[in-house]
Amino acid sequence: MRLIVRRVPIAPRDQAAGKVTALEKATSWKYAITATNIGRMRGIPGTNQPQWLDVLHRHHAVVEDHVRAAKTTGLGLLPSTSWRINTAWILLTGIARDLDVWTRLLAFHDHELLAKAEPATMRELVYWLPARLAHHARKRWLRFDRDHPHTQGRGKVWSTGARLGWPDLRLCW
Image 1 (cartoon, rainbow, N blue to C red):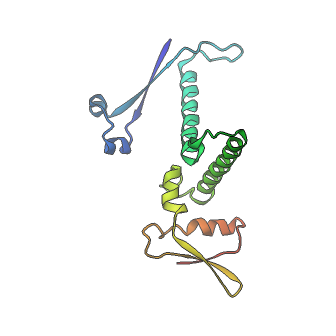
Image 2: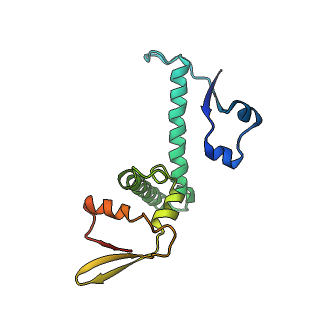
Image 3: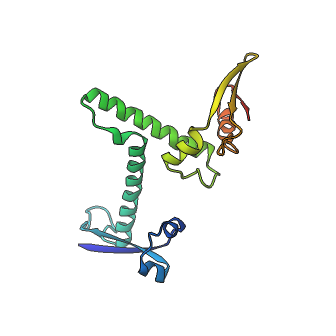
């Protein structure tokens, strides 16, 4: 059994939420401990090194983050009584997750808050904007509510989408 201890700077969100222990306050570092029993893997050089094990476990943590985000997108509502419903629901959850990730990657890559936002944050700040679709003079207008606090600056996703070939849609604020 090996213990790998990695120290990382304390994130401001952890300090604000009060998730810092007395030791972490004194040293201003947060410690992540990983216990593993993975030995040397045959045919892969360097697998007995602690750095390789640390990278392996960090990559697994990224996978766990994606699973958690998929559960908040809809995967957490399983299981159903029917196999067909479950397979369709998993497919739809995957499509929703892909759309969320690609929207953040293409439209909000330079936005500090939304580039790495969780699905709940994207729903609140982007997807749930009050708007109505209006037709006038053979054109479609998407009219956003000016009084909503999150409306300002969110039209960028629609502007970026128009450059990527989304339907012909005009914005009105």
